[in-house]
Amino acid sequence: MTSAVTGPGTPIGFSFTFNGTVYDRIGVNNNGWISFGQSTLTPSVAMNSTSAYTPLASTAVTTPTHLRNRVAGFGRDIQAQAGASLRVETIGTSPNQVCVIQFLGYKKFGTGGTGDNINFQIRLHESTNFVEVHFGPMTWNATSNTADVGLGGTVNTQFNNRTTATNWNTTTAGATNAQRCTFNTSVTPPTVGRVFRWRSPEIAGASYSWTPADDLDNAFISNPLASGVAATTNFTVTATGTAFPCPGSTDVLVTVGDPLTTASITPGTASYCTGGSVLLTANAGDGVAPFTYQWYDPSNNTMGTAQTQSANIVGDWTCLVTDDCGASFLATATVSSIETPVVNVTLDQPTCAGYDIVLTANTVSGTPTSWLWSGPAPIGGQTTQSVTLNDITTANNGIYSVVATFSGCPSAPAAYTLTANPAPTITSFGAQPITVCPGDNSVLSVPAAPIPSA
Image (cartoon, rainbow, N blue to C red; front, side, top):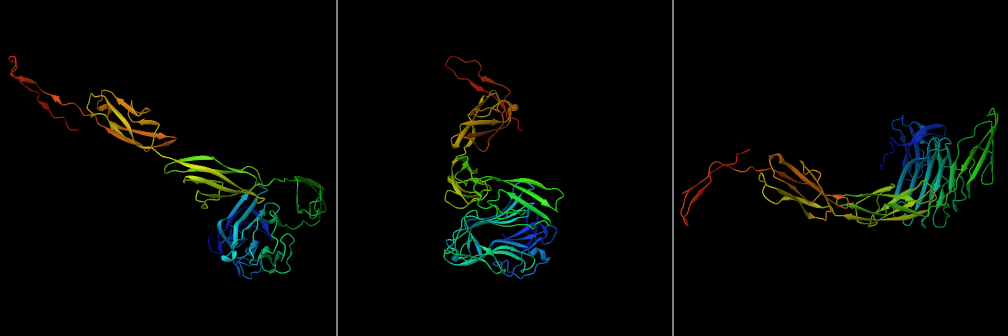
């Protein structure tokens, strides 16, 4: 997050036409609005505004002027609070991709926003160039305020906004760029899933007829709004008129999914080796995509917002999964730690040439249940705690190491460097006297040469 008003912006993921100009970048303002940009420009986006809290009425000038084009989902002095997130993600496949800018868990700035829970998305649709604002669960405290909701053009006299003082489900078109939507405990918030949609212009000379028409706000335009769709419906449109040499028809299937009721984390019972971590994945059991994720560690500290989370603390990890309908489910996984073994290697006797020696992996800590040796033959590859070298010679010299494992957690290798020491060279031997009477003494002598140095 940066306070800069110009920069490279964020890729939309496709070409999007707004107010007659094609864009491929957006700038996101933390106060609930976006502006459009182009990757071929430097800077690509310019979010100049008289006030970042009233983007539609701003008189600030951008260069070029088309970089002023903007969309306000909830333009207001707002801020993220504990557990909040701001995400940009392009979903779907071409030519029906959607760029989603999601504000989750916001509130009015400062202590005046205590108790607020503001959730909404700005959506940009590929091909149709629709602009939508989707609303999730909304909770507002008694402190009254207003928010910009709508579109702004290259100058502040170009606007298409909504206004209400009582009910966000019955807004009307704003007559000025300063008309806004009021929010407080006395104002009815938008129902979860409420959508405000702005359509691209109609093609001149064309006429359209949609069936069934019951859920459509206008069955005779190219892009009607289907509202309150209760069941999966196949809409058929027939296009005729001077704009088309021949009439044609096509179908659009709108699928209604049930809100999220269950979610899970895999693995549900997980463990990691001391000093390591385990990857957890949250999965929605049902609901309507796309889904958002908020992870919490065993102390209930907020963690990541991706579908996966690296866990390295013992206890219950949870993830709040939320679907596009605003329904949520808190999934839980239990994470434990496995102590990684620590071992060393010892010998049973000196390493003298010709001796049989035993190398043993001794446990310093942990409870290993398997061992794997490496080093010169015949030790390398053996899987017992102790291994034997018979009649050692200098050919057995080398490094022998072992890795001990418990429940999938391997120790660091423990090594022993073996050097077979040759026996001393006996040059002569004798006794003085060599012949004695019974009960007499004889001095034995064995002069030995020193062991050659390496």
